[in-house]
Length: 339
Ligand SMILES: Nc1nc2c([nH]c(=O)n2[C@H]2C[C@H](O)[C@@H](COP(=O)(O)OP(=O)(O)OP(=O)(O)O)O2)c(=O)[nH]1
Ligand SMILES: [Mg+2]
Figure 1: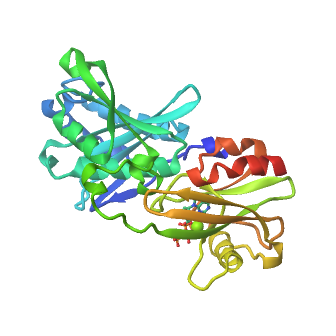
Figure 2: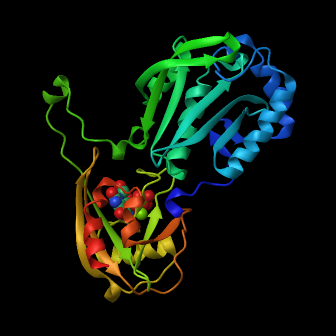
Figure 3: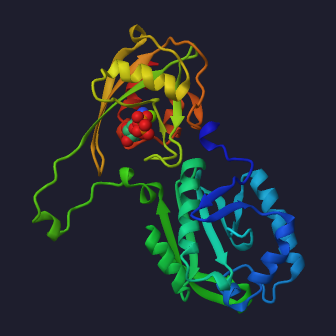
């Protein structure tokens, strides 16, 4: 089903001046030359040292297969000059029915200390949370890998556990730190309200911003509800929402919703077909959301994701399987009762 589908290919992404793209057989020489370096390989658990050239070829083949199977997405990090200077990837695992991604990367030694790991790891995590049905990203690093500990901490990962792991190149077990990040760690809007620090409490409280959003539960002839996946780059990326958007100055909620449904889905809805249903009210970190939700059973045109967002028609009983913004959760039981 849609909430658990994985892309069948590794996409091409940009991170600053770098391009992240699927590995190709022609990358084997660059991969081999750079990874076959004790300073790089000692931090990678599954790689032997010395690293044979044909292993680079076989590994690249396996990355292409893994992407087709939805098991892992590995990217070559390509410099503006077109050189492969490192690799980064997310490997998917499923524990107790919950998908997670394990982040792994290496950067060629000549390219260290330029922030490339932070930049590309942040990019891959944001892509993964917006596009894969994962709940968390983990990263396991050798305890003496201070550079990676700094990278992960800066990105918002938290140390979750410790352990030991076999490191092939070091010939035995090495103490490791296991870091984890969740979607909200990469998204300020999704973060829980935090307790202010003592210095903050002595400052006058900032006025809260109220954001008015109009949204629709569009329901088809089979009583399924239309959900849209918030695309990467927006707040709450990767979460499934009711189509809609912010009311602009001077707009009524209905006018805003008719406009948003045309812009986002390419459907024509008449105001008479919008029936007030319920509302959501939620305090996000940065603003208070007030969102009237309308029912809509009639429109013209076939809804399509005009802003690159994925769409899913979801039966009431399946709604809970689609991660939604916290503001929307109280609405689900109402929809279940209705449908
Ligand atoms: N449309 C919609 N927005 C929701 C839902 N739940 C929820 O918390 N929100 C929040 C997310 C955003 O902070 C805000 C809606 O903003 P938006 O980004 O969709 O606004 P928009 O369509 O006008 O897009 P933009 O032009 O501002 O990018 O409301 C929901 O079910 N539907
Ligand atoms: Mg919107």
